[in-house]
Image (cartoon, rainbow, N blue to C red; front, side, top):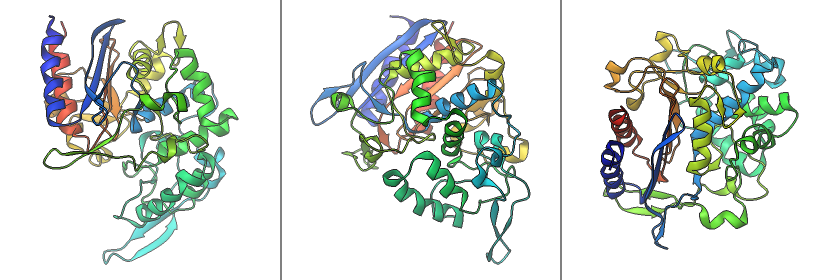
Length: 384
């Protein structure tokens, strides 16, 4: 039993004991599978185990695919990162910003500059997710309640553009709908739907046969159940968020809409870890991946990127990027990059080691700050 197996098997068993009913992990280095195993159940009630073909909602791990797809168009010279977004999405011409004075009184006035294409990648656009903290968040929340049922990505972009931004573009980092708008940009540049573009340019070439925005009837029994976990560890099935995956839905979220398997996503992650190419299929050039995994936030913007599990990381073109291992107590490689999904899925991509890691689970809240750093510590600790 090798070192990787000895470290990871008890750790993953302990994760399943305290958290999700099931999980899976694949670790590949220089084309060699160092670890691949499934733990626990995809469906507790049916006592159905997690399998190699289990399908997961990957939520924000979609973002890495979206940004890769957009960078493929960048490599064709279809746009430049510093181009004003309104050159391609006219709805973003003359953006407005909500401003607050010292008494909390709200006004609206023109933004200090255009939203740039790069601002979408780097989450510095002024777009937010739905929430209750600011007027931008409240209006986005109201919009997103209807979006899944009624909108495609081009319509969503127009509706989001009509909401004044939370801040002047480029002045803050704020997690939000920027990558959904990036999907609309891909549609305009490619002349096809976002889903069709991903299918033709990424999924078909890599053989990612189980990655899609909607669940086919003949694959429904392979979709992992999603669970809410209570403070005392009690698990309850959550099917409240599954509307977008049903046949006939036109909503193809660039920020969080994909379903995938661990094998499919591992193929994609391996391509990025090996300079953009896997099995003779090239997605991006190594220089573009270098740009993707370069920190794009200045010291002021990095103050906004303050999630506990991101200590020591900067943010590149849609991905976290390890900059300062000492600050984060992190035994990984500088330049390691990736992202995670709402329900706890996670990818780590390390071109220096040609290492790719894909972890899958389906639980809310995901316990990400507990689970992912421990997996990373064990994986890097087991490398020769």
